[in-house]
Length: 205
Image 1 (tube, rainbow, N blue to C red):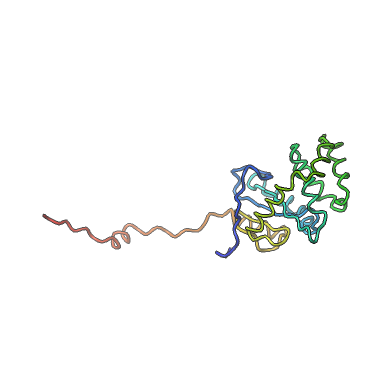
Image 2 (cartoon, rainbow, N blue to C red):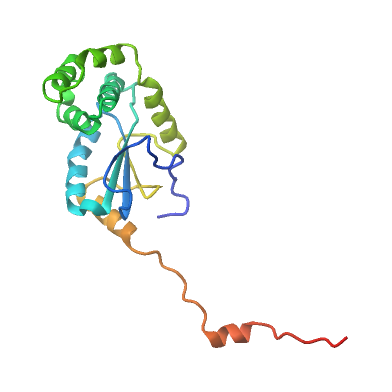
């Protein structure tokens, strides 16, 4: 990647939604919008990428709702974050992407949380209505802007923005490249170092 490739300005931390071990060889981070059709396509691709790499890959998701073009993206993020507050982020994240056409009906997802995930539906409704999780969503968005995100989905691989497409083969190749050890210059031989080092002269007082 070019030395001018934008870097992630907010490192992955305990506040993030993370799948995969902290010792994974590569971290793939996505800034996503729940109403974005391209993010919907990327969702399935990321699943396949995760299956391929297993424990060698850590996946992180951050919210980047483009509210001017996707009016229900923010409420999608609020639904997911409300489920996260009860320990079921990834289950809701997946369900929203699999049912994007229903984002205009928040109760569709709350009913799923109630009947299938065993969450407190009344608590979710209250949190969504009061925008309890909006500060976190906007914090994600802000870190994305500072990191050079201007559309969705945007991926980062080990803190460097992935500037290519997000097709399965492309992502796999980029991740495999990131797994390779960085090339370093060979250390100079002992003879070369001796030739290069100036001789010390003893001075007699």
